[in-house]
Length: 197
Length: 177
Image (cartoon, rainbow over all chains, first blue to last red; front, side):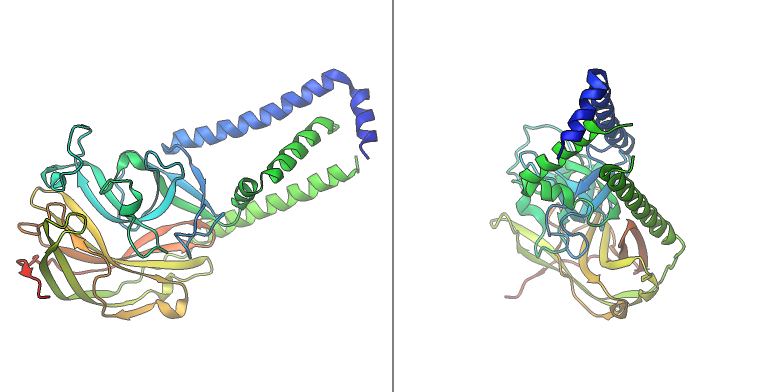
């Protein structure tokens, strides 16, 4: 089946193979540059995320693609949809802001986390405490915050600005069925190598 | 030149280009619709009660209880690229320390144009609480009806349909159980 391809590969020689590998690498590198460039421009660690859970249905379903921005000097408002990541939890969560409190958060770690009145002392400031909730959930997210009472700005990955349905399902399928990932990547690699100009 | 790879490559390239162009066109098309419907919301009642704090049962906490009337015809917001509306009532006040607070007390998801004419007299779905556990000395609260238009493809937009006058938070009452 591939005998013809192998023959052409022989004919074109080693330099051609190297050139194709270089082409393939440059495609991957430019993709990575675009991703990181967008991330720098929008001040977020991942400018595009795939929805992994059904907690925002019927707005967002598994596999939908979201475009994020996170301007450093812009406050979050109620109704904004945020993507946040609690330290210790690996998967970022997409939920809607239910409460905002514009306070000055101190970064001191000696403060007693168990003192329920500690927020009462806080002065107004440029930071924010946020409480979120998934549209499809019945209760707010306090239970997901691993002990925190509120999200702070440093937990926020970005604010959802744009929406594209279904496209991200490819990555979910690849995660659920790893064989598919190898088949697709292997196929693409092979194609890139034996393609003739 | 006319092998199966070239054909597959050509067809899938054409398809994805067409799909991207279509998505961009739909996104741009929704900027043409600039509906800005206004409605009305008034407070029917605003009360504050002493309760036990949720996470710290040995502490007391004041909670606000709101009843309100909404009349808002949001049907103009539905165009061919509107998947759903997220409609919510936000309470806004400044506490005794000067911290600005916004709290969603009620929300509703509207998925069909027929349901977008909202005439309702609900009470708060979510708790209205304060960081300092007391509404003493907070600024008068304003309530506003806001909406988020969520598209099939494209940009999420936000708007405000109505706003109440300022209401003083009343003195906390003891809960009757």
